Image 1: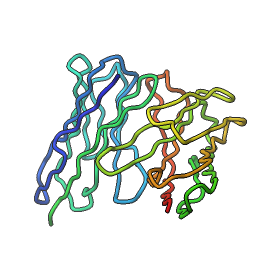
Image 2: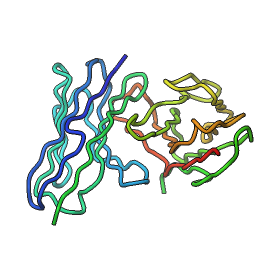
Image 3: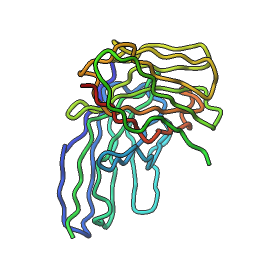
Length: 109
Length: 115
């Protein structure tokens, strides 16, 4: 059974810092990995999708990498802003979709 | 606009009173699923459907039913709700679960409280 772990559970940084969120998974037989953002009490917004054959994807200040063989993905956020404050979830897709518990990010002005 | 819609968005009900949460997508997606999200437990899959008339249990199916009579709709039925089903529920859809390029789209969520 696929297990997805996200570290750290919470992170607080000053505005302008670059930061990395980590996601690890136990079964490398995946179709893709998605990073989502969730604001408190709200739905999930897809940020980046990395196909199993890809190594990374970029969107604006976000860069996600995937190392399937080691079961790891990272989400890099450059020049963080207070508006980036949210919970970030990673999810891996095999026959179903498994989520990590998320990293709660706070960016202080 | 491509979207997944859920209704109702908020619901407070009493133990044992049957309810249905509707989910609809307008993207002709084959795959649809339901999740519940609870503090400290993350998102857990309840049921999923690979296509019309094809449904299967996820991790936490007890106390829930689903049906997939049409491609666009995937209602979640709680025949006898209990307080432990108080949660935030999400419906999601994807063109396919077996293609690496297809992402999942999520509905806005339904916050259910069972007293």
